[in-house]
Image (tube, rainbow, N blue to C red; front, side):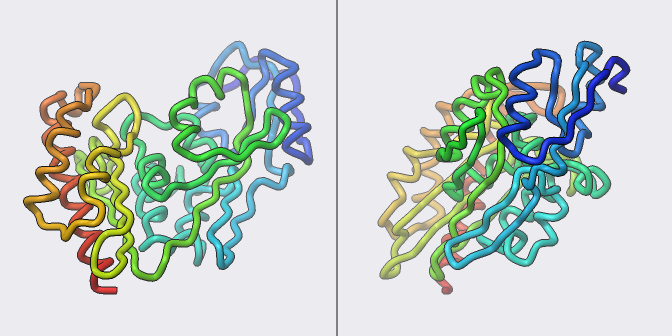
Length: 283
């Protein structure tokens, strides 16, 4: 509960929302509100409700899918473009983020702001080379990878996420997502996403991302470079991944030790890469 809230605002633009929050150290954005309300921060005095700020639209075009930051996770899954783009990678990742009830409430922007080291949505968006828009209050567009790298700094400056853009993949491409958790639909302990585009029978693009194997989801750029342009086999993929995963520094907790997370990272990254490769070749 937010027991000390004294002021409630419902701005109609992102710029106004940012101005309200940045002018008050005890103000907070509210999208779905699931995480903020659950924290029960007694210092919060001002709530800036985003539901009228025009940030909940999902639009599919020939170029890609444009997802507003206050679109709910379930709306992403159910949307005919957002839910199907890149072999349903975003929908699959969103399905692992929360239970159905919380997906109906939680928003894309909120999920990305509070994302943990094994966050499936962050992992999926990294592998898709997504872009993100945010307001501070001026509007900016940045690679999603930059947002992940500088997220803590952006949170401290109290920017507002406004939109995520996922480019439409070419026809001869495929994406795959692999996960291990305590149950089939539990939040991931470790997850892997892979995207491969094929040209003349060889992988012209290889993207591999891991969640739960470092302090935050990461791209495995060194392994991608080794695999690009080569006829992929299980042995080649495993060999390219091994030294890269060995360099990762998983954060152990009650759900998995460092050794367990590193071993699962190797298994899941190999599975996701080979699955994406096989599907892309068939196209």
